[in-house]
Length: 336
Image 1 (cartoon, rainbow, N blue to C red):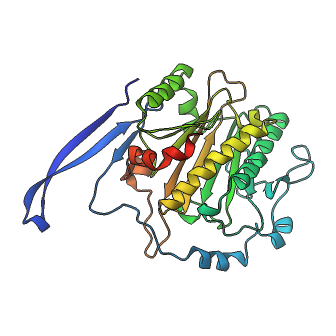
Image 2: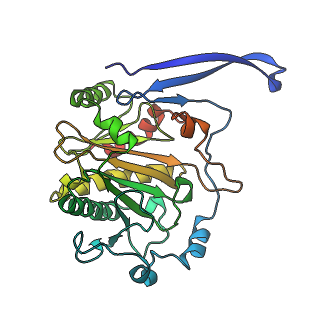
Image 3: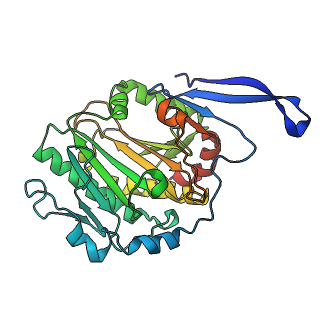
């Protein structure tokens, strides 16, 4: 498989060099699965430097009215209809799941890692917290698949902290299930099974972005990232989140990998991220469960979003941390 990339060179006259001609370059890469492009840029300073913003102070202020905290969750969050989940809310360990008041799909769930953890910086995100929250999402997907088999396109997602798009500070996951795929689900589902295998074999052989296998889950840094510090994971022989039901060992393995990635993000100076686990309809042959996760810019004053015209309107990310540099920092964490 060819991992396509091209470097485009230009020139400018810089004022701090007496306007002497200076060469510029940008590298464009194309994702080998979907074909989308990404740009690796180089500048005099980081696009998204670490921030000194006081997140704990913001947590204290927002906690006073948060509907996900213990004293309000039971009376302020909705319950599932009995035919979906008779107990009304789904629980696993400290995690609690309930319908989303702002439904983005036919069937939705919001699951908090713990009602007691309103402030959960990434360095405190343990494998157990993540795995229990994933278990709630898996239970939701399983219940929906039983109740409404037509809603076969399920995904598990995260907007963590306000820069990621979250409207609430309290950390949580979101699950969606509907009869039609999202755009990215459709693009990934259209990839032939042999191409997924070829991509993983190519990355493993080249090694520059390959992070390792934690058992049944394969991890790597994205060749053509959708955003800063994108990591990808693939779970062969599992097509849908509902197919993780009854395999708590695999849920724990996936939770461990996500928590490990979040610890890396914290070390890199980030506290906000997005995550998506894209399912295809249960039983789809040859489709491996796909995970993508990436960092978002840090809160600061003034605040700069990392979603620009390139990301929103051209569907191309501009990042200044190369996938190879990210893999260098991450590799020893995923080799078990």
